[in-house]
Amino acid sequence: MSVIYDRVALIGLGLIAGSMAHAMRAYGLAGHVAGYARSAETRDTARRINLCDSIHDSPADAVAGADLVVLAVPVSAMGAVAEQIAPYLKPGATVTDVGSVKRSVIQAVAPHIPDGVHFIPGHPLAGTEHSGPLSGFASLFQNRWWLLTPTPGTDPAALDRLQRLIRGMGANTEDMEAGHHDLVLAVTSHVPHLIAYTMVGVADHLRRVTESEVIKYSAAGFRDFTRIAASDPTMWRDVFLENTDATLDILGRFTEELFVLQRAIRMGDGQHLHDYFTRTRAIRRGIIQAGQDTEAPDFGRSSPAPVSPSAKD
Ligand code: NAP
Image (cartoon, rainbow, N blue to C red; front, side):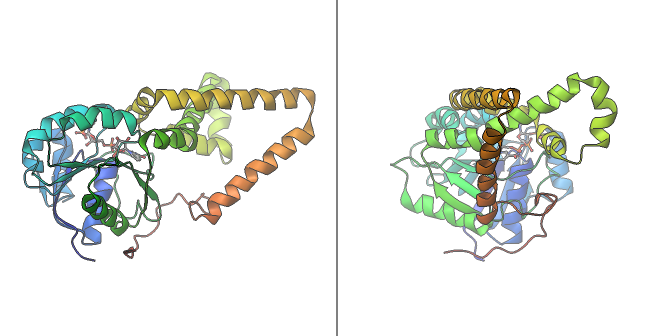
């Protein structure tokens, strides 16, 4: 595969940036990958494992001369990081981010982007419950969606180039309006995480159960909740603080549905429960047919062996 950007700068060196570094190297997509993280500890780890071609002690040095700058820090930190790097961005460069919420990131970052630099916000719909510089792997984005939320004024050539990088890392990409992205993600990711956190919290309150049976018998649904509820607390705190409107909207709808199901259980309305579960089962089938999960007993979560993706353009 050919080089798409001569120099890429990764700001933040956790799961997402680390996976990008591995993928870009594995598939030959960048001439040079420069990295920066705020803590000396993370930078030292990144140097030790040779995560990037160069690790810098300042964000200014990392972004100098970069054709693509990727902001891969928590959503609440995006604005401050953009302000820090703005004076050092190369004219004609593209800045993208990988934040899980789009409207608030755009509000925080866009005002700092200088004229002549392209800002194309993005969000890879791929992740694990692990974080930090050791958690990344090249195949994380394989067959996952990576949504971009360009504005109507976005430069088509810059957008096309970023899309080619994303496809080169094995992901599928589509454009979406930022507010719509936040609503879709509230349904598909944000509220499900909140429900998982709540369920594990409920079990935690029932200490009598938690200490023994929950661990011993957690082969079924609860185990999946615990995996999701082990996700990074900083990232998920930010998601709910920054995607407030959409989260509250979906949570309201969820609560209404829950009450309807609660009533059906109380009234012994088996027909209602059966019909409801039949409809939800069809959604699961649709996800498997779309290649976004597997029938495997581990729900396809074990990391697949890295595969070289084929460029689709
Ligand atoms: P991560 O593994 O926890 O890494 C976060 C990185 O950001 C670390 O290098 C950390 O530096 C740095 N950082 C933390 N707080 C910062 C601050 N206040 N200022 C500057 N840098 C800071 O996180 P991640 O999972 O890669 O997530 C990064 C972004 O990707 C987030 O915006 C998240 O919403 C988005 N995202 C995550 C997932 C997922 O499943 N994890 C999926 C899609 C998108 P130190 O190591 O030096 O502390």
